[in-house]
Image (cartoon, rainbow, N blue to C red; front, side):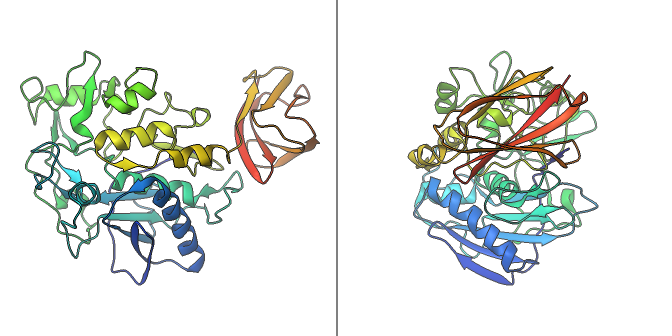
Amino acid sequence: MKNSYYLFCFILIPVVSFSQSNFVVSSSGTNSTIDAAIDHAVNIWDDYLITNVPVKLHVEYLDLTNQGPLGITLPNGRKDFPSTPIQGIWYASCLANAIEGVELNTGEHDINVFMNSATNYYFGTDGNPSLNQYDFVSVLLHEIAHGLGVVSLSKVISNEGSFGTLQATDFAPLNTTFPFPNLEGRPSAWDNMIINNGGDYIVDTLLFPNNSLDLKTEFESNALYFNGPVSTALNAGINPRVFAPIIYDPGSSLSHLNESSFPPSSGNCMMTPFISSGEVNHYPGPLFLAILQDIGWQVNSTAYLYERNNQLQVSCYPNPVIDYLSIELKQATTFVKLELFDSEGKIIRIESFTTNQFSIDMNAYPSGSYYIRVSSNCIKKVVPIIVQ
C-alpha cells in the first residue's frame, strides 16, 4: 500500500540538539533510536549539498493521525536578498543563505519537519524494513528535500488558483517555529520554473492571473513540467513532469515529480508524492540533484556516482509474469539471496544463487501482487511483481 508525503508542518520547542558539517539539527518527541535515523538522513544530504552556511533543521515526532500523511514540512523563506538570482520570488531560506554566503535568518530554523508517530516506521539505517513498515530515513530524506526548496506556494480556494496567498491560518492549529512570512502573492523558485504543455510559464500573470480560474485550471491540468536546463538535459531533453492531478491536492500538487513518470525502478523517485511500505530510497538520484542545481544549489553530483555503486541494480522481467520470471543484477556477484513475499508481507519462498542472472518458476502462485527482495554483498533491492 502506498502512502503520501505532505508539505506543511508545525514544530514544538526542541529538546535534543546535534550538528553536522552542513546542518544544525534539533528534534523533539524522539528517542536515541529515532535521533540516530535522523542523523543518518542528514549525513546523506550532507554529502550532496555545498554551502558555507549550515542548514538549521528541526524534526518533530508527534501524532499526525488527524492529518494523515507520513511527514509534513514547511521551509522558511527569503526573497530579494542582495545576491538573489531572480527578484520577486521566494527561495527556501537555507538556499538563500547558501547563495548569499551568510546567514540571512539569524535565530530562525530553515526547515521544520514533522514526522507522523502514528506510522509503522522502521528506524534502522540499513534500508531493510519489513514489507509492512515505512522506512523512516527514506521519508525524512524526502521531507528535507522539500525544505531545500522543492516547494510550491500554490493554493486553490473554490474556483481560483493562486501563488503566494498562503497564510499561517491555513495551517491552524499548526504553527511554525519561525515567523510565517507575508508571501505577497509571489511564487517560489520552484514554481517559477514550471511550464504547461504549451511551454507557457504558469507564473506568468499576463496569461494566468493570480486568484483566477485560469490558474486553477493549470494546477489541475495533469500536464505541468519543470523547465530546468540541467534537469531537462539529464532527462534526455524532456522536461521532468510535475505532479498536477485533476483535483488539486493541497501540500502535494505542484510540489512533487509525477509518480508514474518516475517509478522506483527509475532511480529518481525520491520526490514523487507516494511511497510504499517496504520501499527504500536513501539517495536523491541524478535527476533530483540536477533539479537542485536548477533552483540555485551547488551540489556534489559525484557523491551520487559513489553511492550508485553501492546500490543493487536489479531487473525483473517480464512483469507482469505468467510463468517464469527472469532476474538480472547489473553488478557482478558470487552470492544472491532471493526472498518472495505475498501481498501481506509474508515470506513464501527463499532461494540462493551464485550468479547474477537467473529465473524462477511463478506457475505455482495464484494471480496477484507479490514482492521480491534481492540481497547481495549486504545491499538489497525490493521489486513489486504482478503474477497474471
